[in-house]
Amino acid sequence: MQTLGKYFIFLGSLFTDRERFNVYVKLTFEEAVELGVNSLFIVSIISFFLGGVSAVQTAYQLTHPLLPQSLIGTLVRDMGILELSPTITCIVLAGKVGSHIAGGLGTMRVTEQIDALEVMGINSASYLVLPKIIATLITFPALIIISAFLLIGGGYLAGVLTGALTPSEYIYGIQLDFIPFNVFFGLIKATVFSFIISSISSFKGYYTKGGALEVGKASTSAVTASCIGILLADFLLAKLFL
Image (cartoon, rainbow, N blue to C red; front, side):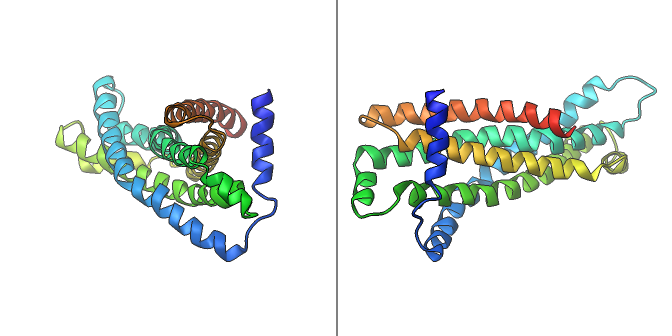
């Protein structure tokens, strides 16, 4: 409970004694490139192969003669939009982005760079952390949209190339009984998960104590806590919206 209270106090400190607006705009764009754009490659690779594996495994299990093969496209679409793209992709981003944030802030803490900002009268928490959170809130939902498209595309190629179904069957399947709210729900999950990753990782890194060894421990702790937070939030959001 003490750690949880410290976490919420840390979040509150982000909005006190802030710098000028134009300072945050520049920092946010820099963080958006570092945390979001630079994660596009790994997100694309994972999403494409997740779609392919989902299509192949669904085709393997869908052996009942009364079930049309077009259901492969429907299942890949729904799994991708509702769960695979937002949740699995964000767990991967928790490892890449979360460790990067925690390691960077932890290094600044142990090398006394954060203390130097405080001496200059700058709210170091707001200056260093708030742009990271805003950047992830902007870029992660965009990455999830790209992920969903690539996942469905990967399912298409895998399904067609393996002969599990025809292109027209797959297209019909992904159009069948489409629920637009699922896309909205996936974006809600992406936004919540992005906040969890950036805020928890920043918290772990910001309060690192010790030396280089503790920076590594903070990065590991940040990834672990972020993954647990994502899974817990995933369950709560599903109960709340579905």
